[in-house]
Image 1: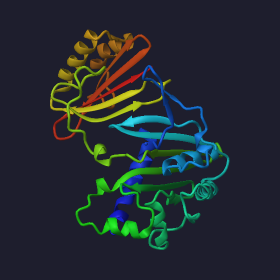
Image 2: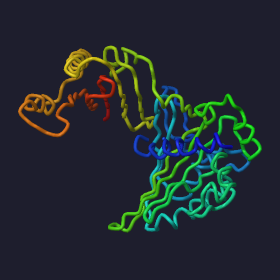
Image 3: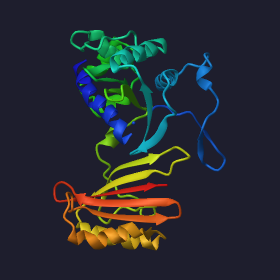
Length: 324
């Protein structure tokens, strides 16, 4: 099981990083005739005669533990969720309570002590690779829990061994889902913040490495000339208009700035007064990160921010964000 074992830390980091960029599980939605999406009000999770998916059971666990409504995003075409909870209890106590709920929902086989390791608890790696959520790290004021799902849907040690024994298997194609929880204690507020991130069971890790393609020029915010799409994060929540893209390309930052100023103006966007004033004054102001370029546009209730900065290998990076 060495191949899968070596994969877990990478996946765990991706899952935990998803708390800041955002990562989701299965979202129950109802599609409307006008193609919009809204959260389903039916409590279908309580229909005990339905066999629930792993991610549905994880979502149900969070609901029972008091988490808020999940926020749903598309990240490079992968659907991800994140949800937050707050508690007066310390992360060490919460970690036991969360795992107890995971055992009840059939995700974990047992509650694993925070000092458990894959070396000291060989069965813990089976839990972690078959949809369980186990301790990954623990400090005096924080706890990280996580786990993954295999593409083949392995549910026991023998099935995991068979996957690991395949010499042609690639790490990126072995996995199709992840669940991660980060718990942090704030001594001054005497409160824990718990951030949960999880994907659905169709998560494609190869999409998270690099999207080597050109964005559709008819998109609301087109890709810059000769640029590649690095990532895209789009909110799936009906009450949110968040859409963020990162491009990378060889052209200079002034050339890219001029392109977006012309292109977005032609599409009906107006550069904000604050953006015009800032760009008039910036040659006379020295500040950290002054090599970056920034433009802001408005259109109705929408707000568009475009930031450019030097990247790697001589390329420049453009980060665009639409919000309402």
